[in-house]
Length: 245
Image (cartoon, rainbow, N blue to C red; front, top):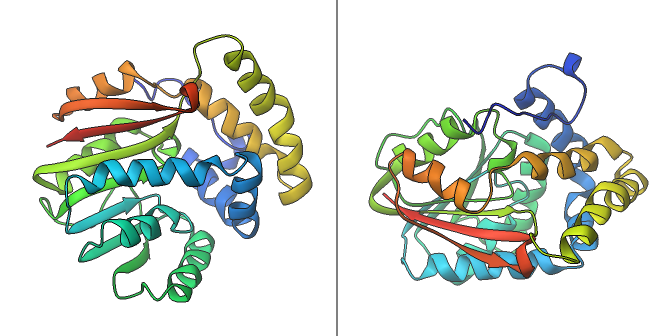
């Protein structure tokens, strides 16, 4: 299964992947948003807009944002979809604190609420949400199938899952340029800006082992999702995955 090959941000003595991911995001939280803009050349903003535009077609009223981080995806959904309620969930308290500040600044606290939680052990009752979404988060699950199964469980029948995630470009020369940038340049920038080179080394490694494209669709289908499909962004640097319950 997809969780056989597992990479972690720090060494094997640093505890479980879940513990290490929490530690990593708590550490880089103050630099996270600015680094995202710099490292992606601002393209990540457009990726989120495109993902939310596809989800908007489903007109969800209640949305769960898994691995919400500092809330960028939830904020975009609140602006564009205008649902009744969005709950943003993350294992990093420091990321959530920054997200809450952004939400208050945009006066969206009546729509978006943020809470600490484990994406692989959701506290919510089954059949609770019209949509469950995640941006650059499922790659960090300790057990991918367990996390996706939880997303399936809390979805209402007919509900939609939307996952925005990095993928590996397939074609020359972008494939080679992508590997050089992610493997060699990105960790250096990460070290200079956040003092944590390993966090951005982990980003490259986690993308390399993530089951992207058709393989990810196969996992979704095996868990009961239907109508699974993906849309390639930026020539394969990123994909939007959509499926129904």
